[in-house]
Length: 388
Image (cartoon, rainbow, N blue to C red; front, side, top):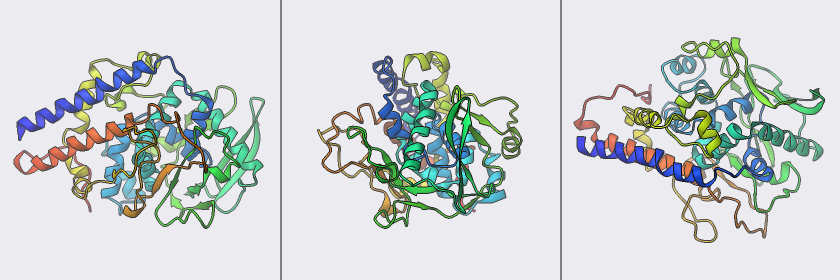
């Protein structure tokens, strides 16, 4: 069993560091297109600003999202203050920790990890373009009459650095309602047939009855500490007081910056970002540590077969996971795929998608092997997935 564990660890290292590197070099000179970025942000553009900021931050740490999603699924009853206390024990980036207060959002990011990883890559390489795309979609939703203030949210149109921007905030700062909507309707006619928008429907949501709805309110406590600067450079920031109350083990007094150590060895998409944040071989050691002792976190999920059941393949026979390949609604994990306009054909919209899904698949194999060997090895010291 020890030999098997060493083999799996070695395989994980190769998959996370060597194979993605080739893909990074292939796309090193290619920026995300405007329509690609709008496709990626379509599911989150109408979320409250603070939640948008924290999702963008967390998307740059895809492996930690996988770990957090497993923990959240194994601990559904841990909420409010108990959840904040439990998060002090975890080593994930605070942006990832904060999303455990929003299980449906975390499930979305994990269920379609390929989208999440591309979103994070776009945010790191083209942050201003990502922020601009969100404002473009908000303006479209507003023009279509689908962005209104109410008991769940407050919509404000204001000026920032000479630009007209739309700000979305919770009506009650302590209670956040996450909207669920159909992007092909809420933004008006979707103009990019080759890049249909992603969408996510949580369990219990009937897509045919209404195209914009809210989930139940979440009492967020100190879990909402992000913010968006829409004007000028277009970036995200941290409310330090709330942030430090939520993340007592890692006090922050500066602006948000990407932390490569939380990347856990996942290669960056392009050479410029790799040169800016990459740490070369040292990332491999981080990747190995990321899954050491974490078998217990995902054991129950893996025993049930996990949530990564594929349904269908993209046109053209591409064997990589596509944005429309998952049907998770029957398992209670929500339905997350790409909304394809009737009659449209997708010939290149998802070229390059699949690295995120591959990352999670390799992670699951490593966790499954450790789970099967748990009875023959010493207890792990990095667990966090026990049910109370």
